[in-house]
Structures are given as C-alpha cells and as structure tokens.
Length: 485
Ligand code: GLN
Image (cartoon, rainbow, N blue to C red; front, side, top):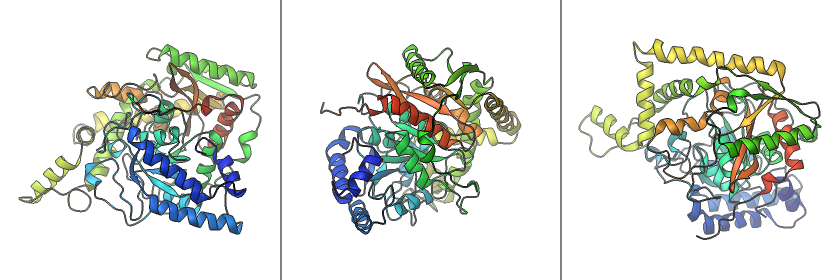
C-alpha cells in the first residue's frame, strides 16, 4: 500500500479494496516497526489518526469523500496542532502544546487526511542536515550513515521510507527541496504567500513558506490543492484565486523553453550530480523542450545575503521565547534577567544561538546600514535577475544541491560548509518564487534532485513539467530498502 500514489490509494479506498482505518493502521504499524531506524517522527498520534480514519470511512461510505479523504499524512513539527505537542525540534518547546491548529493543518484535516504524527526537523528549521534537532538526527533511509537533509528531514525521510503518504514541510532557504533531493522524493516550495503561515512557528517571516513532500508531482498537486489559499489571519498571505493544480498535469510541454543558469553548473557541483541533471534535461528535450543558457549574475551572493536577512528576522522572531510566555523556563531564577538568560541558554541549541547573535549584530546601531540594509538591496538585485530570466524562458532548471547526501557529522563543525549546501535553493526564497525538486538518476545509490524554478504563482506549470518527466521515467518510483542493519 505504502508504495502507491495518492490517486491509486484514493481509488482503492473508493473501491473498498481496504478501508481508511486499515490504511492508517498499515502506516502506524510501519512507523512502529521501522521509525526506530530513521527517527523521522517526534510524536506519533495513533489515536487521533484512527479516529480521523473512522470519519473518513463514514464519508467514503456516504459518497461525500474528496480526493484526499482517508489518505494518512504527517506534519512537520513546526505547525501548531491542537492538543498535540509542537516542539519545532527544540528543547525550548519540548513541553509546548498549542491550543489551536495551524491553517495548513486545519485545511488538510478538513480535506479528510488522518494525521499520523509530527515529523522531526532541525531546531527552529535552522539547518541543512537535521542534526540540530533536540530529538536527535534523522537518518537517510537510503543510507543510514548519511543525513536526510534539512530542515524538513523528518518529513522527507518519512515519505521516502513509506511511513506516510505525504507530508508537509517548510522552506525558508531550501528546507523542502534539499531534503527532498537527498531522500529521493518530490518537494514543492510554493510562491511566498501561497500557503498561510498562520500557526507555523516563525523563523524568517519574509522567507518562510509551507509546502509539500510527496512521492510524485501528481501527489504533490493534490496536497497543495488542499493547503493553498488566502487566509485573513496571515497578512502576507496572497489574495489570489487557487487554480486547479490537477487539470494541467497532462498538458503537453512541447515548445517549453528551459533556462539553465550558468552559475548553477560551475565549480563546486559534483560531477556525478551534474551528469544526472544533464540526463534529465535530455529527457526534456525528447519531450520537445528547448534549452538555453541563461545567467543569474547575482545568484552567488544569495548565501551571504540570506545569512544576514534570515538571522536578522530570526533574532526578532525568537525574542518571544523568554521563559515567561512560551516554552522552557529555568529552575529558581534569581531575578528577571537571570530568568531570561538561563531560560534561553538552556532552551536553545548552538545553531539557534549562533543565528540569534548574528541577527542581533547585523541589526544593531552602526552595523544595520553595513549589513542588513546592504543585504536588502542585494536581495532586490537577485529578484531582478529572475525577472529578466523569465522574459526569456518558461522555467529555470538546475541541480537542487551541489552533492548527494553527506555523512552524519561531516559538516557539523563547519557552519559555512553547511550553509553552502543551500547555494542553489536560497535565491528562490529571496525572490519569493516557487521551486520544485524531483528525483532523477541516483549516483552511487544515492538520490539526486533536479530543481525547477518558476515565476510567481506558476506552481501548476511546475507540477505539469515535473509530471511529464515522471510519466516518462521511473526515477521517482525507486524506494530505499530500510533492511535491518
Ligand atoms: N538550511 C537553511 C538554513 O539553515 C534553510 C533552512 C530552511 O529553509 N528552513 O537556514
């Protein structure tokens, strides 16, 4: 069951091949048996999932089921869930139970999806390897000595290992696409503002966006359909109608103009990954697409710009965790200052502290102009590069990451090496554009991601372009074995 697409599962539910309860029990049994090997879940919500599955079965029986009714999914532990712990991967929120559901969670629940649990993640979504989680690292299902990517590593690993049909994630600088690439699944980061941020714990508010990790582009289209849309509770949510993401999936892509940014194929790109990306581009040419080289001249600045903007916003967002209103509080504080200092020192891990310090520094009097303001100006130049590129091409393609999944511990002592992992994903967030990563030919048994970047609100087009490749090739059908060591 767990290797089937959502469409196939939904058809089987309707044909009474199995019930939503049986499907949910199947995933729960797999989580119980296999998650100890990869640590993808922080919390498993078996009881709620089974209750939701019963409701789904009633809807199926009544003939009022939608395309996701009874399809079990998981949520990244950054989304607030009513009466279920929301830790954000941090000791700070280890005991936090939100009194409400995030909009994205509400919408997927209304679509009839049982929630299997909350997935592991880098602490406060800061990381590219899932090693900064308070709950321990997630292991890559393809090779458990390697990282799954981050920060939505639990969601990506859970989808790859068949421990849920699909999962939500968030992407501030690559956190959906990079783990999707490392785990061999399809990951979509929508346009900034397409999905509501309400109830999603904030890291860098001008960059954060909710999205999907799934087994295929067609599955991702179904989940996005339920998640997307305006929400008056999020002032940055886009008041744009949500198109039908399924209808264009089968559209012919002959004549598609693909741009390959020369900056995404230069030094630093693993030759095996490059070959695999080139092979996928050849498939697109066989489908009638044409390819041309383009330039995003300011793209190489995206990592330094991001590591000023994101920490600045994080230092402000995370100021709310003060030991008074939310989360961890130290024992027996001497006075207010001691309360603040020790609660934050104990509650946050090293990477989060590093970001708060960098962010506070770049926003401080005297440095604001030199760092933060400069970064904002460069952010505009990066966006302008994309605007010019989309005057010439329909879609931009390149690798999602410079290499395949690296070994656990390989970059933990070198934050800059870790940050450079997001070199191809970050510019998209700075420009607010949608990006999709799909699995292409593996290298030495490890997955590789092809990244597709579209103009604003072109999610439907990206899913169409990805689906066409997935109709022609089987790369997205490869699954890891997860055999006992
Ligand atoms: N890896 C990047 C970071 O550490 C991106 C994280 C994300 O997208 N949430 O900030």
